[in-house]
Image (cartoon, rainbow, N blue to C red; front, side):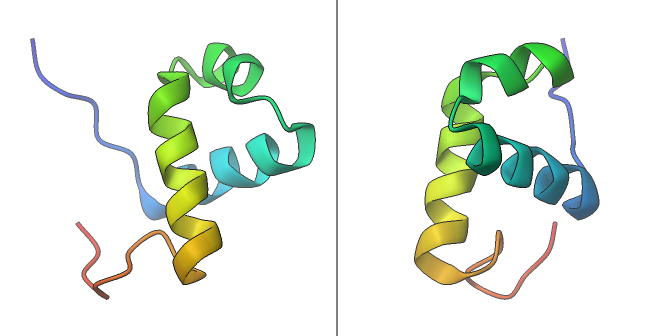
Length: 58
């Protein structure tokens, strides 16, 4: 099984929805993304103001 890859735009949309709703579980079900991954993206975004703190987009 291969890992899913999310574009920076997809990640940002998911992060914004998670922050607006305050519920990573609901957003995760909507996008089929693990709530723990969404929470990690939100923490990174809040701490660094970006989803790519090193400046390297994958």
